[in-house]
Length: 92
Image 1 (cartoon, rainbow, N blue to C red):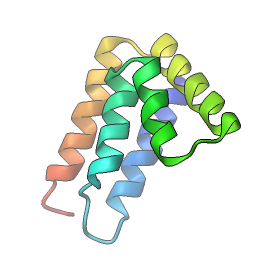
Image 2 (cartoon, helix red, strand yellow):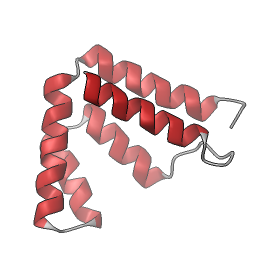
Image 3 (cartoon, rainbow, N blue to C red):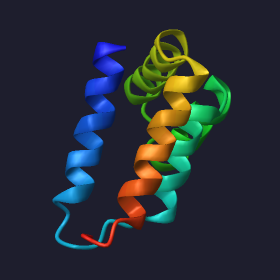
Image 4 (cartoon, helix red, strand yellow):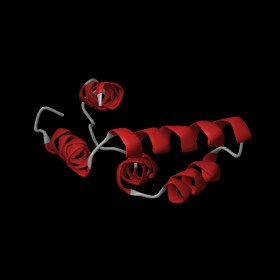
């Protein structure tokens, strides 16, 4: 979970330093939801809408498989909860 945890914390830090608007655009929110809770096929299909490049799609599939194999359901729920708390923070 070290790599996945680091990625989640990096994302959280980026949200906090985004200049005051911690809301995610709908496309990014969907991507995060699919990464954490969707299937590999759904995630890759979503990425493909924006970038139909075989290398990028192969990387997207690899990342999703890594997330699924390394993170438990509890880890994914915690990551989702963290994103929701950051979005709801009055400091944003």
